[in-house]
Length: 185
Image (cartoon, rainbow, N blue to C red; front, side, top):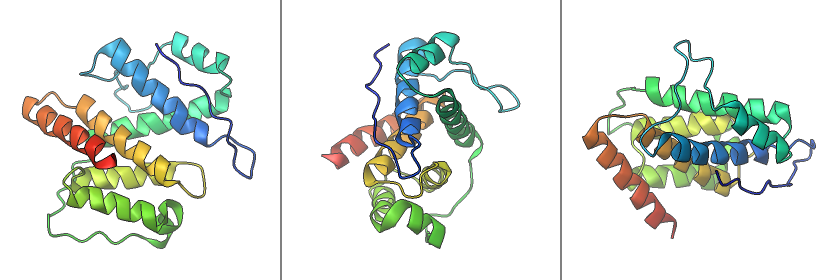
């Protein structure tokens, strides 16, 4: 497993909120190397646990991530995986998404616009847009940077890809991920 270098950027409260996304990036990388590119680790039936193995947790601690931040990141990642599996809202294609004041405050106008532009470009569908917004709102920092929004979008798309066994959905999601990478260039 290739471990990414830990970021030392801290917010004003002194906690490493950036670490949560850094840890989740490492976990996604670990998933693809340990489980193959077609699946994620098994989530407990009661949606309360996911097993990445003690070696991953030890590696994260050795890299300097605090145990409480590791656990926050694991909870965030677990909620992402669970939400991907249970979020099957039937939102009509002509629905208009209005962001709440809290969402605009957290994501910024640029982040909100970016998410909507991905939906217009058919990279995100209505359900994945909502998952992205929900996951961003769960992050502990007061405001998310546009870079953090981009990372969460990628994580949602990757988890969508991992969470389906339907070949036609896999092809559509893989196509969206490829389109997303081109969109960022």
